[in-house]
Amino acid sequence: MGLIDNGNLRPLPYDFLPSSLTTLELTAPACKDFPRIQHLIIQNVPAFSNQHLFNISRQGTLKTLVLSKTFRVTDVGIQTAAPHLGGLEHLTLLHTQIGNSAMHFIGRHMKCLRSLHLGDYTSPTPNPHSQHPPAICLSSFP
Image 1 (cartoon, rainbow, N blue to C red):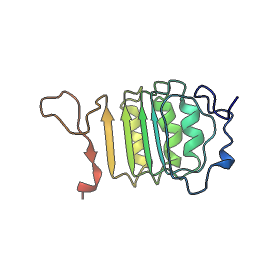
Image 2 (cartoon, one colour):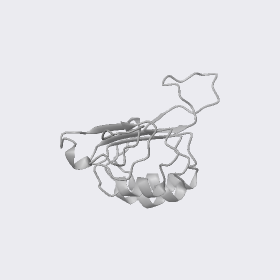
Image 3 (cartoon, rainbow, N blue to C red):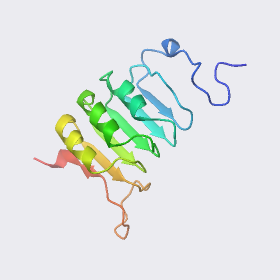
Image 4 (cartoon, helix red, strand yellow):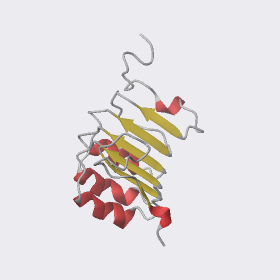
């Protein structure tokens, strides 16, 4: 049996990842502990929960966070993680259970945000006929 078996990253000792690692993308397996990373993309990981988000956020090193199809992350998860995400610059929330009440905590705590993507769209270029909202580029505001 190898270190990673059938996409299960639980036995992966994160202490052995290089300290220079700044981006980690997980597409399907559930993970418990993370190295001090700056860019995290979680796509289609149903087991990723509010607790996972809190555990990652309290490290205070994230600059980019993408949550897509993470249905166990809710407004409460954003509320508890937001105070630790003050340095976050890019936030994307697609196909999630996060609603309007989370926006208060995002605005209150994430003062460094330069871009915010919300909704359930997947196209990187806005379609003027689409019902989905475009990205909000916060750097264009005074």
